Image (cartoon, rainbow, N blue to C red; front, side):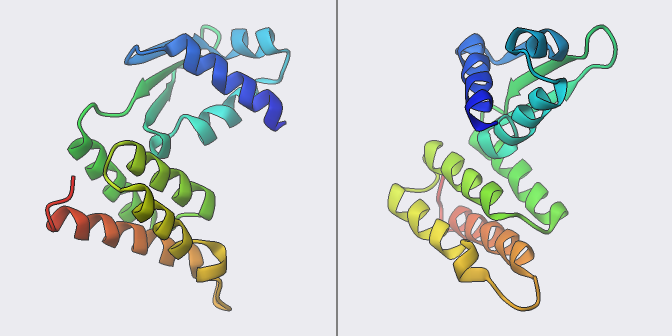
Length: 155
């Protein structure tokens, strides 16, 4: 599944180029790649989400059109949305947390060393506990690190 998912992601990124958004039919895309529409949904939810700097919206009817937009052009607005999501969701799994750290690094918020260290801090090995609280702890850690960096004058 991941090879096809990689191909779909690459196609969407290339098609989008530097454009701020892309409108595409889920069914047409599924037909083009000869996959079920659920495969398209999987790629959208795992690779074109806020952690990766995107927002996706589905439009009902007419072949199930999807709009993929780059998240807010300013880091401040995007960071506020990230913080809100971390606070509202209250939990973040390892994959989502690491994707978020990667996006923060790519936007210049964290240095590579900071990002690498934070990935260790939020890893399953570090947060594993008998009370199954690791996703909640991970979200709290990420949220507090971002808030602390902002308060200290970070990007």
